[in-house]
Length: 260
Image 1 (cartoon, one colour):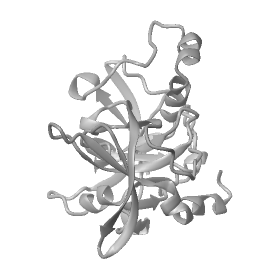
Image 2: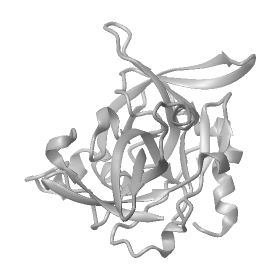
Image 3: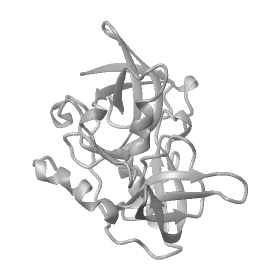
């Protein structure tokens, strides 16, 4: 089930479109991340709580970020984003992802028409130890009459070397439109989670609340990890991600459905 929602720019944290007023081709030639970021905006969506009252629907809050691995609407997020949605009080009436009705996100618009697409947390594949979840929307997104075209991400399975530049795109701080931050790989380390040793990669900058579940990607757009947590205190601004190599079976399961 889905329905249109109009979101006011004044009621949400928003940013101007990347490269606005500039020659996009020139900028892309200087910085290869620019093209990857624009493509990634068609791969991400906020994970949100929606309330439905008759034919009316209202967005309550964005709780995190997801990214698509198929045009059907299979997506990846951080497991704790979904598990926390089950604990909030008052309860989240409908769990959904939000997408623009038009061809692209439009941060310059005062009113932005979006639609929500429901999913059920109970049907998600959740790995609590790795803090990663894969979900499917209730309705097949590829059959919906959307002008907005989903671009499933591609993966880079190897952990890049220390100091490698990366970016992550998501919906922090209840942002209405996607935001992108840049960072560098700081270190690779194993950590203990529930008496299990799991791999983790650290970035050299912090991420804001709501970024959990964001894809971490290289300049060619390939995703290397899922944003799990961040520390933003002075002197300790770092972000941790789960490398996609650690959850390869979970991530590639989407491609067996035939919905690329």
